[in-house]
Structure formats: C-alpha cells, structure tokens
Amino acid sequence: MKNILITGASDGIGAALAKRYASPTTRLILLARNEKKLVAVAHDCKKKQSAALTYRIDVTDTQALQNLISEIDAEYPIDLVICNAGVTSIIPKGGEAESWQAICSVIDTNVYGVLATLNPLIDKLRERQHGQIAIISSLAAHYGMPISPVYCASKSAVKGYGQALRGWLKADGIGVSVVYPGFVKSSLSDQFYSDKPFMISPERAADIIVSGIEKNKASISFPFPLNFGIWTLSLLPSFLADWIMRKLYGVKKS
Ligand SMILES: NC(=O)c1ccc[n+]([C@@H]2O[C@H](COP(=O)([O-])OP(=O)(O)OC[C@H]3O[C@@H](n4cnc5c(N)ncnc54)[C@H](OP(=O)(O)O)[C@@H]3O)[C@@H](O)[C@H]2O)c1
Image (cartoon, rainbow, N blue to C red; front, top):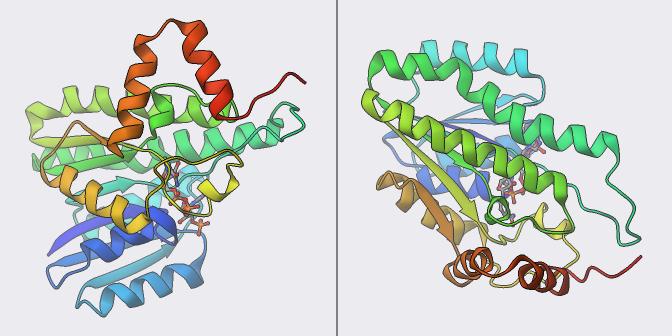
C-alpha cells in the first residue's frame, strides 16, 4: 500500500488528484474542512478499490494539524504528501486594498498551512530515507498578478521553501516537486474576474501533476503557453512587462 496524504482534497485540484491516485494499491489520506465533500471524494476513490480515509481539519489550526499528521504518519507512514489546500484573495474591482483579515487568511492557509503539514513529516521521511513531497504553488509565484498581491506572495513563499527542501533532502532520498499551475477551473479560479487564458480542467491538471511527481520533476509548470508567456515576461524590461500584466488583468487608474 502506498500512503498518499493530500490536503485540500475536498474540491478542485485536490479532489481530482485523489481520484487520479485511487487504485487497489493506494491508501488515500484526505484532509480538508468540508466533511461532506471529503466523504464524497473518498466514496469515488473507494469505487476504484482504493483505501480512503478522511480527516476534517482546518490547516490554519497549525498545532492541531501537526498533531494529526504525526498521528497519521505513525499509523500509516506517508510515502507521498501533497500540500494543496489553498485560498485566494482578490483586489475588489473598486480597487481598495485587501483587508487585513483576507491577508491573514491567505498567509495562514497557503504558507503556514504548508509548513505545518510538512514540519512533522520531514524528519520522519529522513529517518526512513524515503518519501516524496509536492507543494502546489502557482505560475503567479514567478510574476505577480496585479489583482492578487497577497496570494502571489504566498505562492512565492512556498516556491522558495520547496526549492530549498529539494536541495536539502535529495541526499536523504526524498523527492520534492513544486507545482506551478496556470488557470484551472475551480471555485478558487472562479473568484478571478479577469480573463483566464488557457484554463484547463482539474482532471487535466491532476494528470500533469501526477506525471511530474512520478518523474520527481523539480518544477511542474503548466499549461505550456502560459508558462512560456510568464517566462518571457521575466526577460522583458519591467515597464513593458507591467503594462502587459495591467492590460491582461484589466487594472485601470482608480
Ligand atoms: N485553480 C487555479 O487556477 C489555481 C492556479 C494555481 C494554483 N492553484 C492552487 O491549487 C490549490 C488548489 O486550489 P483549487 O483551484 O483546487 O481550489 P478549490 O477548488 O477552492 O480547492 C481548495 C481546497 O483547499 C481546501 N482548503 C482551503 N482552505 C482550507 C483550510 N483552511 N483548511 C483545510 N483545507 C482548506 C478546500 O477544502 P475545504 O473548503 O473543504 O476546507 C479545498 O479542498 C491551491 O493551493 C491553489 O492556490 C490553483
């Protein structure tokens, strides 16, 4: 049995990943707040003869999360952990700054939530000299979207953390991949009021992520046209890159 722990498994990319990994040889350990949705995902996984366990937890409760993950790992030593739970915040169309509450919610979930998921596991994986970590960042980590500054900051933070972990943990036989999706259809991306070029389904995203994790790729970026576009932006003079981003996201003078 391969033990795979996924945070944010009740919806969107996390739910698609759970269903993609479901098989008679996997035990899925699914975490999120919405128990009803989690149970529905687990039910679909069980139809593929997978073992599937659900745990209702808020990843911003970092002490409870660390305790839970230590308990789970003691019973089912984790082979692969996917830090996927995430939220966004968007600057309202009127242009006011993000509220402090929204800022804290994004950082608590997208940054502390990831650190608290991994902190109790890292030394256990090192002792076992085995395991894999995947962190869901975003293409927005490479070049900030002008409509969601805190979200972009949170995704850059976990990008740096994942890259550093990869270098550190390689000698212990532990793989680390950082995942940089572009737009994927979900309740999170529904909140973006801008155009969403090259948007793909969560199922397609899950296929790409699973294939990248299998190859232990350092960086799993998709879709190609958007990834290429973001890379090109970083080569342009900043006045031009900023102009393109402002046009793309419809940012006007307030
Ligand atoms: N969709 C995109 O275009 C896109 C692009 C780049 C990166 N991403 C990243 O992909 C990841 C998944 O996003 P998604 O698009 O699939 O969004 P989604 O459909 O809204 O799913 C988010 C998941 O995170 C969970 N979650 C949120 N806050 C949580 C908390 N405090 N504690 C526990 N679980 C929590 C949600 O479950 P509960 O509500 O049940 O807790 C849900 O399962 C995120 O990290 C996101 O930043 C998404």
